[in-house]
Length: 352
Ligand code: BMA
Picture 1 (tube, rainbow, N blue to C red):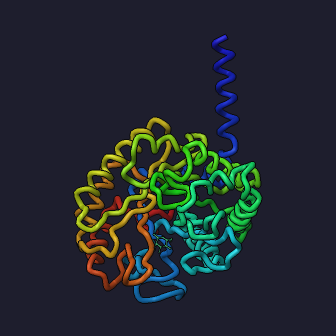
Picture 2 (cartoon, protein in one colour):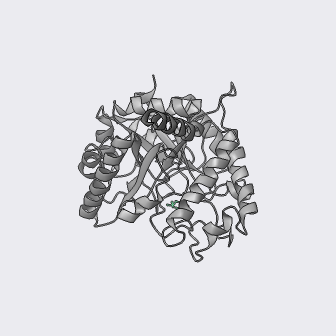
Picture 3 (cartoon, rainbow, N blue to C red):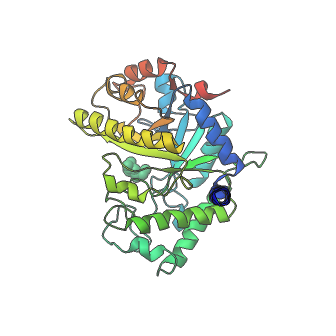
């Protein structure tokens, strides 16, 4: 009897793992695990599109110009693809996203995609959090489900075009429905139940997998400052590859940043170790780097306490909002000092 039960449990486990076991995904996961033994990859959102003093010029990168190398990881955002826009919410054409994504993969880099979809009920932005029925309205049986099917199809179509010249699918890390333990996005806390959130995650994942996509590594990325009940929205080990955390330091908030980050990463890493998942700081930073020693004095010592795959800082929109160094920023020397450490991995450190 016991043997029979064990066999049954194994079958169920294998079956439930099956949809996530496709090859390009597996290859990226293996690469991430191998790279983690070398150190921590640096990542930057929207790195090749614009910087503090330039826009859209091909071949440029604030990170490269400040430190001599491209980031190992580049992040791009799909917000707007769902409604058929030609440019994303930050005015980056999707054709350019595809071009730079393929270029970064071809040069040996790793790519992650976030998604700030519009509010399907009101047509507002991802931050339109006025209504608590949006998530339930797009789930199967809901009033907006048909519209959401089209939105998912557009995401699928884009992901499906991420291919090498030889037509091989390019593996990417996708982290939809992020920061859901905050209340600022329409899929966030207080705007849907834990069950609805998980149904939303499953709905998107099942659709993309049913459509035959084999290139997605899945990251669940709550915001730091996690409460016990935030874990109720964890989609499950069979649905998540990377447990991510988004964590920004606020002005005059160094102590709180260090304490909260440390608490959350301790907990997530403990869990991830048991569940054999990867952990990453899927977003982090200190806007406009008011402290020019932040990289080596605050961030690096925290990161090094944990087994993390990568840490990605947000975009250099302009002088009013930037997170990575540029040649002219005061933190650039400290950033260069940080990346001199063999454990901090830039592009050249991860290319075979
Ligand atoms: C936010 C800000 C916004 C941007 C959004 C999506 O954190 O940078 O300006 O539109 O991310 O990239």
